[in-house]
Length: 358
Image (cartoon, rainbow, N blue to C red; front, side, top):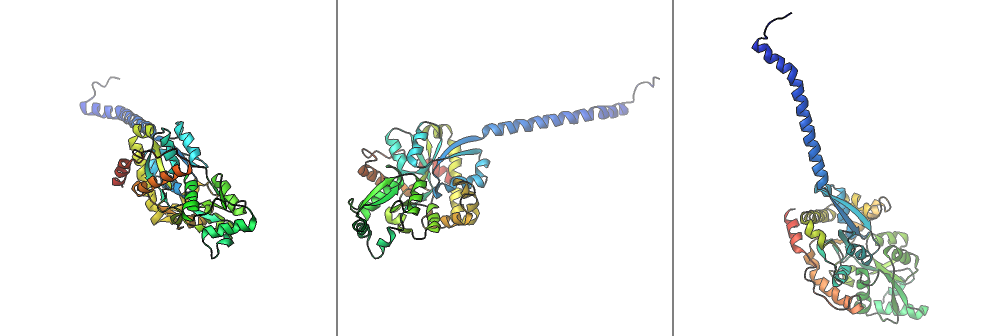
């Protein structure tokens, strides 16, 4: 039955009924597409960072920033790889399979002397390196200066005291030799340096396989619990005041291509340093990731964070002058053929921009 033309007001109503749901569906699809596109763009903006690190307390900032979610907020995805020593990590960095180096500064000087463009953008800790004496050597230090104590051990046992440390060119090796030969004036007839990895050094000190060795946190706190007869005979300040310990460095080619990413990383290191110093109880829950999740009890990690051996910092200016001294010692001990210019080693502009944004 033909009812004739639909009145204008009903025609409008019909359009609302028929087209309203369609328009809402279309709008939903447009919004969904926009969200999907935004998500895809966001995913593309995430920068993967291949970060090599030494499992010591000086690497804590990287894992605190990760645990607090700051890296994710900055569009950074950290892919950490642990190394036994800085010299070993340098080989991987120079091959281009790492972007960021979190380890001792000393190997970087050697790397730059060989043409590797690597730049320090932040410090993390100073004066971290101590010297522990095993249960067999520690008693000789009662009432004796170091040189006399070690000489007495050699006269009693008929052999040199062995001190374990990391490879030539590393920070632990340099500080140990500085302390033995220049500070304590130990005779080379009474002592010798034995090179090994960090874990092997810790075990050797604990079990007495060596008479002493380089040690830092959290290894020192762990060793104390395992064998209370092991004694700390020299602190980081005793061995090398303001010694430049662990730093954050980036490959030059990566820094040039990704300046904003590097700046964000440094900004997070600065934030993490402040948290570690001011609120260690909050930061400690993230630190275990540097040593293997759950492998070290949280109370041990917290004691390590509060230890006098752990001097957190982030401003690389604090370590510029000691770095020049460090290089002179590396020449003296044979890690470097000659002293090189340190120009370009520290990228202070990146640090300053990051610091101003905090």
